Length: 190
Image 1: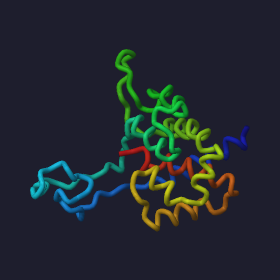
Image 2: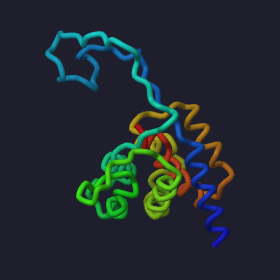
Image 3: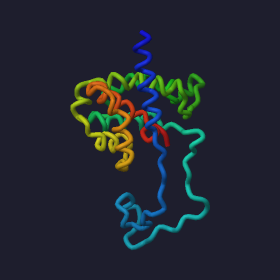
Image 4: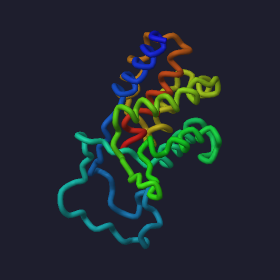
């Protein structure tokens, strides 16, 4: 029992250590030529220049993404439909993971706390233990991180991730890689 808890603690620490802080660049074009906003504006019109201070993410108090968004990211990683029963355990613990139930006077709580992290890893472990997960991303950290984080990871992020996992056995490496990718701040916070 103690050995199992020690392993869980190590995985949780690895997941926390691998959390990244996103940054929003001001280098993106502000026109309808940007593929992310194509169709949002009539052809030939430009987006107005932003006014005020640049958007900044809070590093003091990370805020959780809504559970359905986190489930959607997991669905992308495991190549399952977001409605798949594999995610029922997460939906069953919705309020413990920060969701709300106004009929029971439970308000949304988007704090990423230690107890939520532990529950997240506990619920995520069975999904990451499967052979399907191990085969799909067999030493392919880049694809796993891109799907889990919703963006292409930088080369130094991939190298840091792989270096942290290098000393693990291959069967452990796949599981920990999966848990760490889906528990990193990039995957669960805004």
